[in-house]
Length: 304
Image 1 (cartoon, one colour):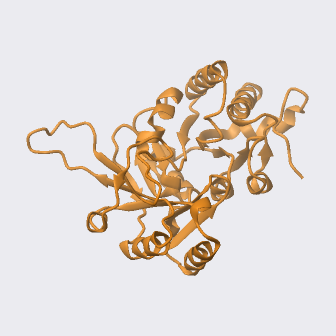
Image 2 (cartoon, rainbow, N blue to C red):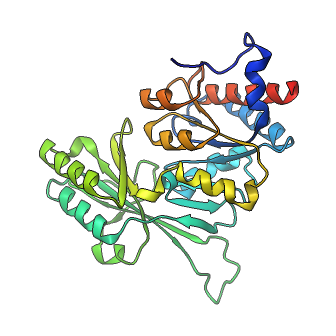
């Protein structure tokens, strides 16, 4: 049975647990990306107000850093805040771009997956994320990350789902890169190839995957689940002394995050699996539901 997020008709006691929230970890796509300009402006205002009450905000997304950067800026997330990228494969400090953790897919597994997909020509995107060492000529270079998207498939594609330019797949170059995520276009897979890929993924102890509403099979290293980094966040100096971490999201890839967070919330448009695992469900979709969550925390801090 779904427990609805407290509202103006709820008892005072139902707000109490939210008074202890000191950190919000939010998904982006489906949680923060759908909403009117006034709602997004209210989110920014409430986020800033909560920051003054020592409630920090971070993000946990499947996006690369450059794909999440605009949202990070809109939320006013401070430099140095740990953020989760590539569904947990990368944990880094916003602004400094210093890696806290990076979980990679082996070149062996990448090659096996590539071989299985290449025979039918389905689209496959391979994401890499590496540190860039500043040149001796410019020690003050600000960008420390090199994020690349390699693509191969029968259909010619110039950009990925985030709108970033793709680079044609090159097996030799890939061997020199840190592979953090692989996306396979599910509807381009014949049934027999899909079954072979599923058999391989399910038999491997080194990689995990989600096959949900995104239209892609999303693959990452086993240790790269979003929820695994919650433990790391709790042990980081930045979060020591914090009372409770609240997670909010909408999809199956947020389930592991929900399980590790102290309080978990699914927006109304969330998947059935996300709603089944979470503690509370919002009465509104996406950004509107996120705004309602912020309002509940504000009210809880006022009451207790």
